[in-house]
Image (cartoon, rainbow, N blue to C red; front, side, top):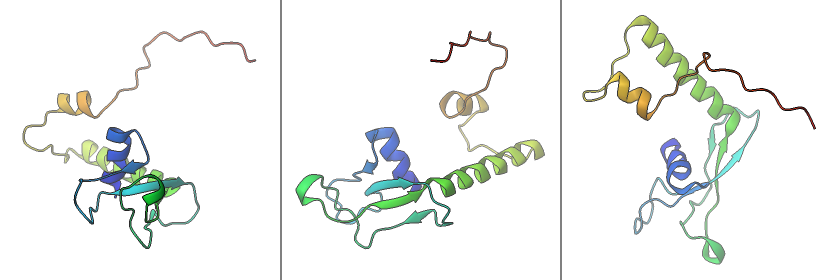
Amino acid sequence: MLYALRNAFAHEYALANEGKKGLQDDPLRHRFQLAESEDRLLVAYPEKSWNGVYGAESEGGPTEVNLSELQVLVERVIARIERAVLAGSLRLVVGVSPQMVLARWGFRVRNDLPRRPTSPAF
């Protein structure tokens, strides 16, 4: 489901991932609904999966993603990666270099850039 949500954002710029055309029950096909909730459930799946069709012929409910729990999950993953880096136990797959990780998937926070002047409040 997280891969499908990522695909929806990255490829469709939307809250829906149509999945593969022609596949009746594609596990990557979702119409997402994002919510912030104190419920500990990360995902709530609909009784009937979305059929991948928009408009009047659309059938099936949305896959509900709890943004609060998604944040918790992401923070746990980041903490685990940071611990592995500090322990020297993080290993990259063959063919992936640290430079590639930074260039493709990472970012750095720079504190050596000059500060922009702030605008007056309106």
